[in-house]
Length: 396
Image (tube, rainbow, N blue to C red; front, side, top):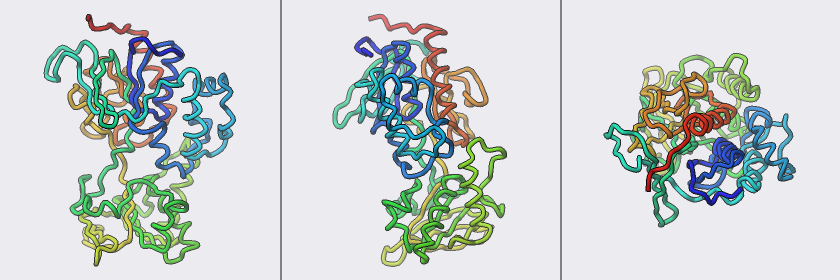
């Protein structure tokens, strides 16, 4: 599509939900600008070696599949019922979508949207009308653009939560950063040398931590000196909460397998519940790391070659610091800009008409977000902004 007209909105982020918003704009022939700090699907690529929790058919949208079919770019798609990987989701779906006639040439990769404001008002001004000003940075070049509306699809994976007591960084955590992974690395593949035959501490009690534990237990089958110490805040004998009638069966399988390892003490895995991380420090001669934790009220120290901290993720508030974007004080839920809804818009009511926060960022630090929810949010954001109240331009 031709996108030479003045943009009516800007999309920030090129993950699956950003792509969906772009597809819907293209279908309506709405001029839009689209920015991505890295490359398309970059956050998916971080865990590209891992399998998805649901069938591939649950990860794509009707708009996306139709666009690929029209462009005859379906040859790289995983089969609908298969368990894809993050890598195949990017390479089989997102990257071909970027080459469709609807989206080709529109995405500006490597452009960081570092800040946003209203064009002609400060955060403390009561009037919240007019367009938004976006401060862009690409390499050393900087510029600003004005757009009437913004759809923020930037996600949360760039902001891992620290592992310290009460949710703040533990003393020594930053100085031991080179010995800590904040996502599930390719334990059985490219990153194998970091883990094989090593002592590893895993911190966290969610599905990501369970995935890491399962992979390390698998590695221990062929490298028997691999040892896993799993530190979990929950005191239950089963560290990972399982969802009743989980709509993603593979996700439940991950939880069940990790709970089994923890309960039986098998797979070279020892699990400690009731843990708070108090400090980290380098080991002797700067080899490895020593983690001090309170385990059911008793201080203990654990030595390891590497720490895998998987304590969840949280949305960044830097982008919107000069806007009236009031996050929920408990779960950091931002206002989506949509009508209140426990699934589609769980956060507070917006105070910035025309700014929409959708995708995983809309769930703050809460879990349970599904990409299908993000696709529905994208459709509702466009319907609310473009059908409900046509955008007005600032008088020149």
